[in-house]
Image 1 (cartoon, rainbow, N blue to C red):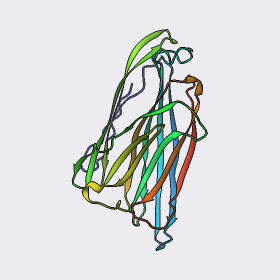
Image 2: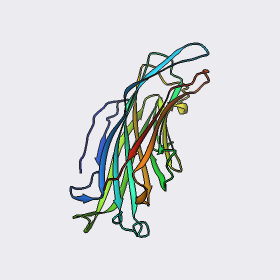
Image 3: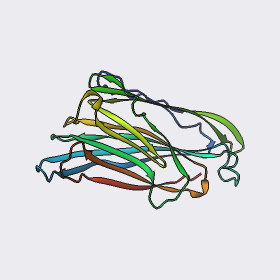
Image 4: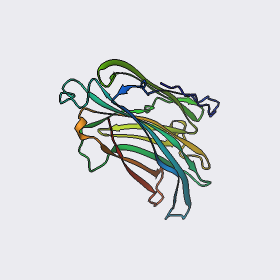
Length: 256
């Protein structure tokens, strides 16, 4: 297990990350994977209504933690014995807006790709909508996940309990975060802080990408699963423009 303290002062708040998602060395049926989805990718477009320019750069990275709990996933009775596959995705990165008007929102979504027909459920998307604490025009959120997993070690011969925990505070400057679950999809949006009466995101600013998605499945035989990571942007007001859209299909294997 590891603990990471990352100090990043925003709105006078100390940013804190505590990561206890990696079980001890020797744990069976656990895998970790780090994936870069976009690395300072330029997103540029123009309004067909007034020809104003819109641009931003996107960096989006994910850490993927994969666990089989309550048994050996290769066992034919794995699901019948309450066995489950958990996939935790920690999102990080940044949207760097340009020096132009930004009455828009930024959307991020994770789900199985459209070609998959798999028994997968989106369980959590953190921080939860409406959980932000106001500080002027800003909102302070917390990602706080805690769950005990019954896991195996010693090549699958011994059982032990692993307390998975993750904490991260999220500060949204003049903005808010909206989280949604829809069956197999987990989504989050960075948008203007409408609770403070704001209708636009300030230009020339960095908006951190921070989110925590949890998926679960009982059927080991359907893996690897191809996930669709979707990013797009939309305007609060209509500008007769089709904003850029980024579709990224990535196969997430268990490889136990």
